[in-house]
Image (cartoon, rainbow, N blue to C red):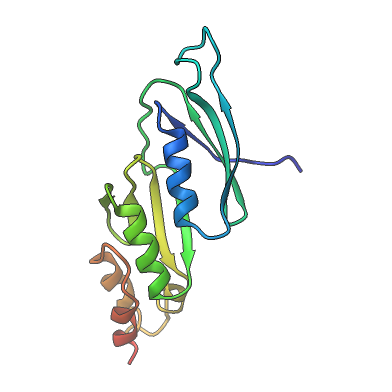
Length: 154
């Protein structure tokens, strides 16, 4: 099967974004950086493409010289284990970005992310109507708060 690598397209922030993500996610690294040469659309020495790995998943960030607006139509889901991980990724990715609803956010580079704790699956879609209130609670949240879900199920 061919490799599928998500690509981020930036005006000039590819290396800055890759550095930021690599610092936030464990077991991550930049694996290569290619640079524009003379006569290219951006000045020689500007990063062209940055290949990096975030905890085992490969990505590429490319500088094209023109702002490329992102939308929530494509987002990256971070499945967390516990509130501490939710808090870590939420704080890291919302710094300079913006909060959305239900665990969604846009980081400072305009990339959409979903920060979802694996434990949330224990609460959402429960056939017990009293416990199914978790969906309503989630709809009022920005960052997911597992303590709210736990209190509904106490």
